Image 1: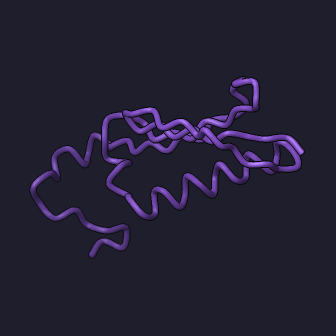
Image 2 (image 1 turned 135 degrees about the vertical axis):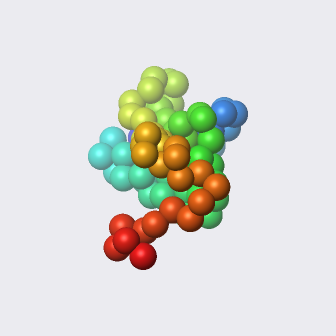
Length: 92
């Protein structure tokens, strides 16, 4: 079974040195999404940094195969709301 590596980047590069055996690239892509979701769930403040949060999937030769990027982009309208209460989507 092929081994895939899930490298985390959020301003610092955190390489996966062990990897995970998975049946194919599709399974590795799904695992990268799960890993990104769990990481962001546990530390959502990472998304507010100026550096995109990334999980890069590579094979055992180091070839980059896929990247999951989570990036928060502040809308221009929200810039004027800093320091005040930001309304939710229901207008409350």
